[in-house]
Amino acid sequence: MKDKILAVALRVYRKKGARFTMDDLAAELSMSKKTIYTVFRDKKSLLYDMVDYAFDEIKESEAAILENSNLGIEEKLQQILSVMPENFKDVDFSELHEMGGKFPEAYERIRQRLESGWETTLGILKEGEEAGIFRPVDHNLFQMIYDAAVERFLSGDELRNYQIQYMDALNELVNIMISGIKINGE
Image 1: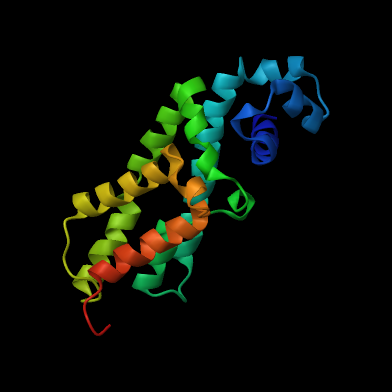
Image 2: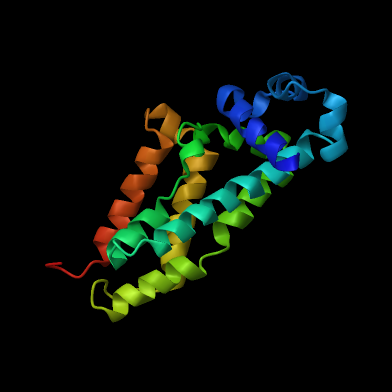
């Protein structure tokens, strides 16, 4: 029941952003708000759990990338840094900053999840360095640059103002970062 509510809440979020109401969610689920409130005590807790639900799906997508033996080290790093599960492709991530004011716990959870779980990514980076594909770089700095850029994408109006889609910005960030660490001639 919880996963069903979270999946539908994400769909409602795609349509209405953080401004969706529990009435909107109940209508989409064809269930009463009372039933939703047996699983989530309020919208804040729902949004908090939605963040974990979304990031857990991202981690599942990362695992699929790692298992793909047809991908080289560079492709794996590229795809993991820009991974986006299919059901998130049309989410307007530029609206997430609105969550920061009304739902600071959920927004802080986004920050926590962005900054954690880097072991796999940094392992691929190290593997690429050892294979001579990437030049040695400070892994902490690499992570900080990525985290800071993604947080800026999510927390400001710049992407919207420049009419840049989140996924386009993320893909360009990843291209810039990987081009910056590739050994020349590769």
